[in-house]
Image 1: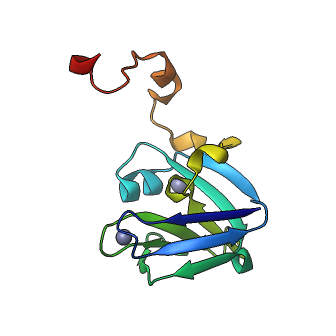
Image 2: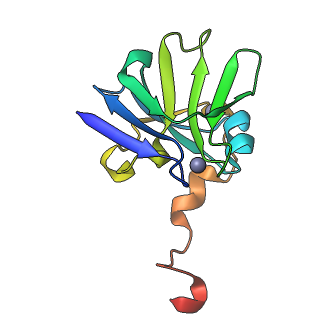
Image 3: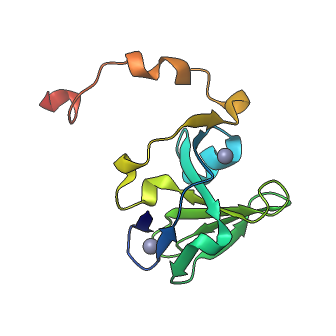
Length: 133
Ligand SMILES: [Zn+2]
Ligand SMILES: [Zn+2]
């Protein structure tokens, strides 16, 4: 199994070999604020399984957490925390070339999820925008 992905502007891309250690949706406040999104999809792999082309910018989002993102387009790509997730690279699964092929298997940091998250699947759905049907 091989996975490829990239940032929005294509300055940074990556290849992953092998199976994920876990595939998750994270609800933590750090992910929310860094991504500017209510939740973030992640898939973790052994560090040696991930080959990166290009040079991400690294932001220390917590004492041991390091968020790697594209300094040009801002896409969040990787998270490394050698204390909490030793030897692993967490990859933002929304940047996979085929994210639909890798559904999350669990929610993590659910204690920090937004209170309305449990009801979002019941909201009205529009293929585009309400004015367009
Ligand atoms: Zn980019
Ligand atoms: Zn998180």
